[in-house]
Amino acid sequence: MSAEGRPGEAVRAAGHSASAFACLRSLTPERVRTWFYSDAASAAVAWFAAVVVLVAVLGWFFVLSPYGAPASPVYAEF
Image 1 (cartoon, rainbow, N blue to C red):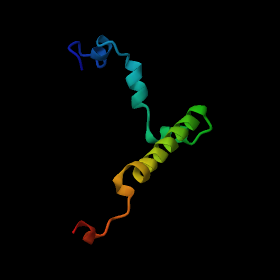
Image 2: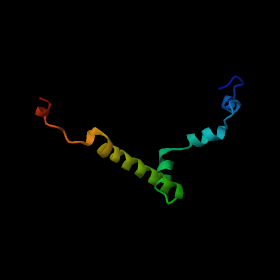
Image 3: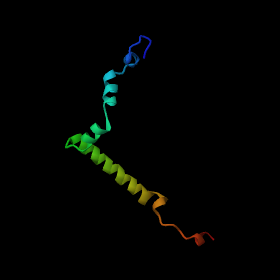
Image 4: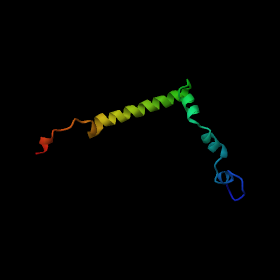
């Protein structure tokens, strides 16, 4: 609460709208899940972005990082 006693007044004074915070607060896992599995174009873009990120992680793991390489024998160090 702000000095005036009204919640959200400090948010408006900082230049942010209270409706942006209300929109974020209204996002529940059920609503996000419903949107993510819907036929909306934005949900398709979100699915595409998720697939690209997962493929990029796999590509980094197997191509660029040493973690995907087979282990060398212990005696190779001696």
